Image (spheres, rainbow, N blue to C red):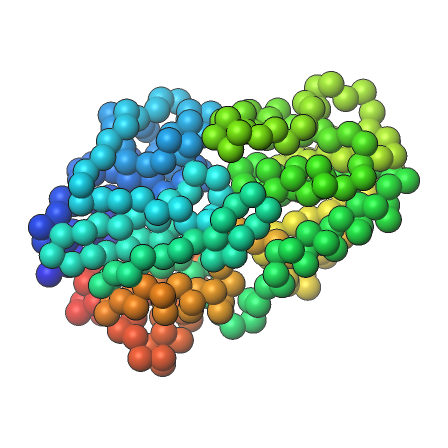
Length: 323
């Protein structure tokens, strides 16, 4: 019988396959697997070896002290999940097949291809946007809106905010397509750019913020979203009369623009929206579904109403029969 439990990461026990532990901060036993290099899915202390994509391992080397040696097993396969560069879903195959999506996105976005989920008997699926109000526009529509805004505001510098891994690279790709003259990024983003550019065999054409005396009209600066509230950002805006834009799936909420104080907001997500989450479940066609990360109860309730055996996965509980 398959057993799924959540503690430090998600533990997957499948008869005929080794125990697998996904995205644990400090994995104690089992085969450690990492879906991608966002901090909340990555180790705090590097295990000796781990299963992950080569790019995730390289990005982990930027974000963490210590990099695990490569590890593989014939019962464990990785599948591009469409979330960020290097991200992978995890398929554990024994007497039954268990798919852990990690964070995922079905839609193609700029240089990222969408998730093509394989079939499985049991599905562990993220539920970040697991409620019906989250219905996102097509990414290409958002890109067109951003390109128009970048052109219309070309007489002023702009500062674009997004997660340093994933969103920041997409923002750079959008600026590349625009008529902006120069593109600058923070050192944190530039360090993450390097392994991504090697893996994708492309350059984002960004210069370090250290090369910048002052941004002016025609310039674009991409910064990590977490620095938005720091004083140096407000000083930079005041000194240069820069416009700001926040780019996120959460920009779908009317409160997002109020909370950030940005001049413009755009909906561009590295996750599935509600309908795409349902689409992943339909494509996988599992017998059992566990929801994790986000609106877990709401998504599980919706899936149950649609005829699936679904339950939110809670810490230190395992198998649907225990709920």
